Image 1 (cartoon, helix red, strand yellow):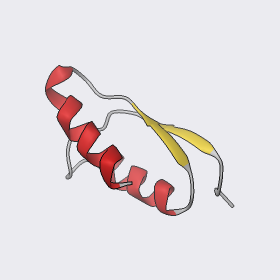
Image 2 (tube, rainbow, N blue to C red):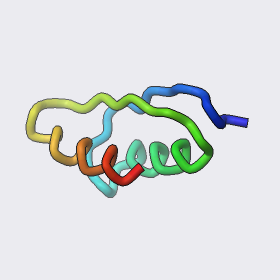
Image 3 (tube, rainbow, N blue to C red):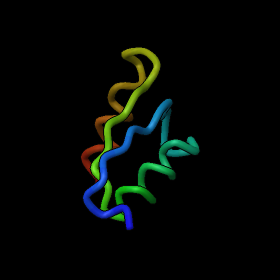
Image 4 (cartoon, helix red, strand yellow):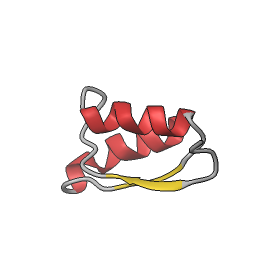
Length: 53
């Protein structure tokens, strides 16, 4: 149902954040995702997540 759709996940912080789990679930359902995060400090975490999807 979500295969091929595009979505945005807001506020990814780290592996324990709800946004992280949501991103994994949506990607598992076939969605293409964009992410937001607060501050450069969290950029590495978001890049890590994006690399696993």
